[in-house]
Length: 113
Length: 113
Image (tube, rainbow over the protein chains, first blue to last red):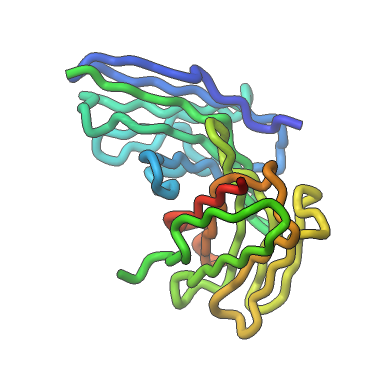
């Protein structure tokens, strides 16, 4: 059962452009939505996270937009840089109980110089 | 480095052998998670500890898998009678319950030949 759907699978963006990755979830018990960045051979690193009480959160060049009614959220990377080339995963979890993360399938982002 | 530490980073084993991985979480974190990540996919939850108690196990965790956290600090994940399908990256994460955020280790890459 795929509870978090992520798109696109891969994305190529020119340096300086905006990278946009989208996720949709099904479980209304989810109330914490982090994004992770993963480089080859490394573990996922927490990038930014949001809760449903806000519609947008910005940290530096990274912004999460959240649409509770549509059960969708997205990551925007402004002024994309070659160093941003990595795989990005959205995830979701409830904040009660085990708080285990359910991940999307990942987006391989390539920033062309 | 006070992050999540995993050992070994890589393990190659023959089919049928037993393997054990270790995870040292961030010291003040009482929650510890194991996830499995196959190539091109997002991490999938395996099991979760709060202190020394194993509170939840995924149905992905067959009876060949066992995890322990004997003193509520480090954890071990053992796979008995390994199969080629066990080849994956095994990730450990830790969090504190009031912060929700999970931090991942670098993972152990298991290859079963």
